[in-house]
Image (cartoon, rainbow, N blue to C red; front, side, top):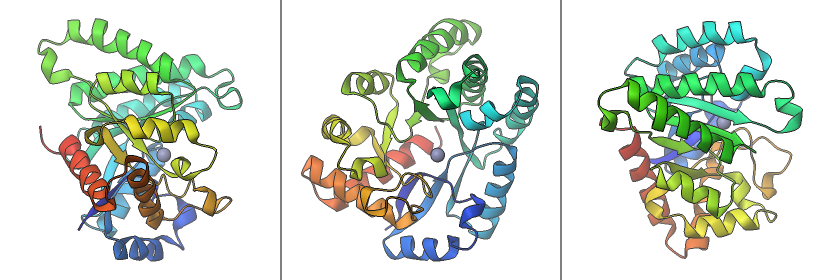
Length: 275
Ligand SMILES: [Zn+2]
């Protein structure tokens, strides 16, 4: 057994005193690979240190998170993008992420144009490096599709010769949109990852969407230490909660828990493996 948490933040300093216990608990449940979501240069360095400390368990993922972009000037973002181009090129880096747009008014404020610019540059970088992307999208599912249209269907494919080699691949982390929005991402060949919000009573729409997502396009995640289920509301979200997410998917799709764990593992390996 080796079930996979497709998205978490083990490098978060809040976990320094909890990490060993949480990894042990998750290991007892058969979960022992943890794909990270990158935030910014400080986090990438912490991810690398973790991967040395827990060999074979940590999936490195480097990118500029929308929150990091909001907190930094365009100049600072451009400096970090130069570093990202070098860091993400290494074999150990599985994906470029988490990248995207967070357009909640209290976060976006005056940063929307900067978020769009840095996101677009990171999409182009991922395509050049032929790495999958990990998307963070909040109130931005439709705008992201417009950006895909511009970057992939107009700009990038004219600039690059071998169109097929530069196809978009990756997943949307903690997808929480409508079925119409889900279909657009699936049509582009992206996978959709779901986590703690699926285990909340208030997430009816998401539960209905998960019923319809083909099992071959689904991933599961904790986003630990964030995004707990109702049961853990107000607490930091432990890694072992991945099993709760998998159980909820199994109930909704009326299939075995083992099938959910195996399929989401297979999907992840196929996506991140050598092309
Ligand atoms: Zn995240």
